[in-house]
Image (cartoon, rainbow over all chains, first blue to last red; front, side, top):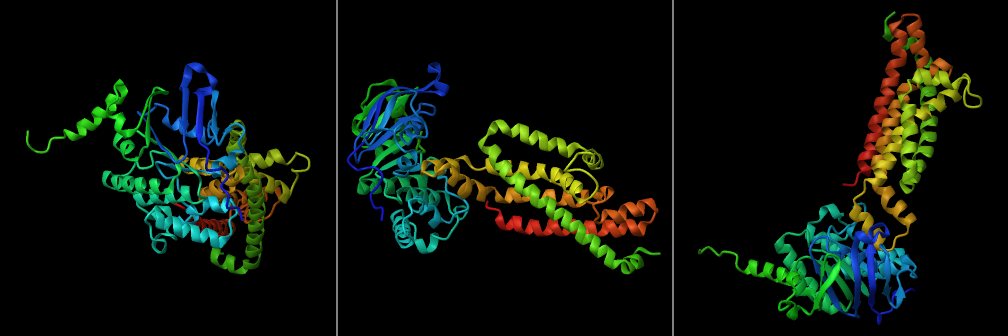
Length: 263
Length: 210
C-alpha cells in the first residue's frame, strides 16, 4: 500500500526571485521579483486586490504555470524538475467555485485523488467517511448526492474534503469562501481556521478579504501590482505603514463605522 | 386506389424497403460516429485543426444532396451506382452535427472543473476520458440525434443512385404521379425519423448532467 505522501513533510515552498510574464514578454509581467519561503505547517495568506498576482503565485506552486525567471522550489526540488502529476497529487487545491465534478457523487468527488493513487476500495471508503465527518457533512446524508443537490457552502465543504483526501502535506486555496453568502462564509472561515490548526498542513491561502486573512493567517503577504509590498504577522499587519496595507486596514475601519441607526 | 389499400397490398415490399432504409442509415451513422467523435476529440487537443475540420464538414452540408450524389458517382472506389455511394454521401452529411457537437460538448465544460482536474494531478488522458467525455456525452448524443434525423431524410434521395430504401417508392410515385406510392415511402420514413428522435431523446435526457 502506498501510504507515503509524494512530498516529504519537512520541506517547504520557496520562490527564488520569481517573475512571470505573459508569453515571456517582460513588459507584461504578472508577478515580478518574488522571493518568498513558506515553512512547514504555516498558513501563509496572500492578500491583494484583484489582478495583484495572488492566483498566479498559487499556480506557480503546483506547476500549472512556470516562472519566466527564477525558480519555484517545492520540497527542495524546482517545479521544472518535478513529475507534475506526482507534484499535484501531493498538493490539495480548493478554488472559489469548488470545481466539483458534476457527474460524480460527493463520495466519488472526495475519493478522486485516492482513486487516482490506486488505493484499495475499503480504504478509500473509510477515508471518504472520515473526510466528510471532518468537514461537518454526514456521509449517510451526503455521500450519494450530486454536487447540484448541495448548497454553495456544502459544495465548498466537499471541495475541502476532496483536497484533503489523499492527505497532502500542502494545501493551496484560492478564495475558497469568496462566493458564499456572508453568514455561511463566516461559519466556514471559523471552522476552517480550527481545522487548519489541527491538521498541521502547509497552507497557502489567497484572498482579498483582510478579515479572512487576519482570522486564518500565521503570516500575511501583501501583493500589489505583482510585487510583494509587505509581509507581517496578523497582529503586526494592522500597524503597517505601507499605503496599500493602510488601504486594506482602512477598509476594516469602514466596516466598524457602519451606521447603527443613530446619526 | 386509396393509399390505405395500396399499403395493405404492398405491406411486404414497404416493410422490406423500410428495413433497407434503416440499414443504410445505421451503417452510415456508425461510420459517421466512428469518424466524427474521435475527430472531435482530436481537434479539441489541436485548435489549429479545428477550423479546417469544421469548415470542410460544413461545406459538405451545404451541397444539395442530389448534387452530392451526382458528384460521387464518377469517383472511383467510393462512387458508382448502389449502396456504397449512398453511404458515403450520408456519412458526409452526418459528420458535421456529430463533429460540431463533440467539439462544443468537450470544450463547453465549466473551467473550474477542468482547473481542479488538472490541479489534482489527473493526466490529459484521464481528464479527457473521465471528465470531459462523460460531461460532453449528452451534447454529443444531441448531435448524433440531429444527424440521424437528417440521414433518414437524405437516405430517401439515395434511391436515385440505386441504393434502395423508402426513396424507391417516392421516386416511382413522382414518376407515375401516384400519391399512394409517394406516401408509401414518405410515411414510413417520417415514422422512422420520429421514432429515432424519441428514442435518442430519451437516452440524451438520461445522460444530461446539470
